[in-house]
Length: 538
Ligand SMILES: [Zn+2]
Image (cartoon, rainbow, N blue to C red):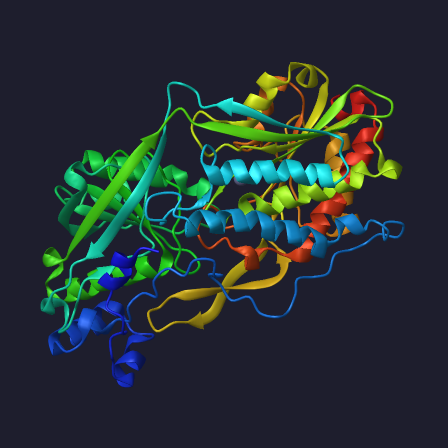
């Protein structure tokens, strides 16, 4: 979608004799690069160019084995509304809102897309979600609009480019390379729109590394290897980027060493112009720096970075709400899934939202009618500043808020599990591969209720859900919006590495995993619904 970037990249991978390729694998990179640079024959030290960005394409190997089928306990066979294939239809419809956002270039040139709260894509998703509640058989359905808080704005990058500047000193025919996975981070700005500067590699940018490195006037390249989703890497990554800026770097490129080659929107607020680079782009840049170091030309290696942004304020958004009135009680249980997300966002949080609809279909059936009221919230989410969906739900529905006894936040629930594969590309990239299970799911129970914890233990036994083995009181950014209710918040949440990246596409979601979670949550809600209040909140 960004023609200039594509045109800027040399199309054909550098030609390289097979012998050199063989020599590269398993040898020390710096030695190999030094040899090639001395030969002076191959573009970019003989490295293969990175593969570019492939939107809507899985960043890992997804073969034809697995996932493990869902377990259907006896007596639950009739719950067809909870079957994976049915839920997947909704998943695909939700992801389609994101794809449309990219097609119509909702943001600038379409390099960023998603279901963005405050923009049309977010509004359409929530409006469609409320229709799902209706089609599920819920009578009481509403759309509740709210305004962005007055004192904040949404930073949006409209168009950008990170370009490695080619020169024959890096091998004959070394042309500019545009890193298509470069992703500017909020609230980056570049005065005058662009900058050109030499790069300096800083490793993980720890103080012990930086004591040896002068970053002044340079673009610092730091490396982070997420073990799970990038939330867990915000510290130390963001403070270290801030440290780099305070030491005089003029921009920071953070190489996120993860599956495939994706844009990743995380690690904001770094104190200057900051961009993430995807796995293959980052690896290429690091290998080029190694090659240039070996050839004595590293101080000549430069990048040109351009960026145009805008700030949007005065935005409106909506929550979609469906209410199934209880047969015996005015107390209610809130079931929440956020509708917004960056890029395709199949895992964050199209899967959770699709599971929410399955539960709406289930409990809207007369034979499954709950004793307590169930409030389904397709939330505007928590990614847009000043537009927290749950917080606005609480503020706008004082009666429901007053009678709530529990919040269940369904978030990132059915992504497949990916592990490093053994295969290595000739550039040293370690590919990832899906296995037969889903990524681990954390079960957060804010009040540590033994009854609620026990339901999660039984869930594993009954449905094979991959909940991690220990307890947690975690409530995510989304669940946190409900804290003012003063009731327990239960969160089911995976933390897979593709979170907030363009690689989190439909194919990464497990269809049996959707069913596993839907069947488990139907069981969970049923048990909670029957339980006295002092067991839910002792
Ligand atoms: Zn989320």
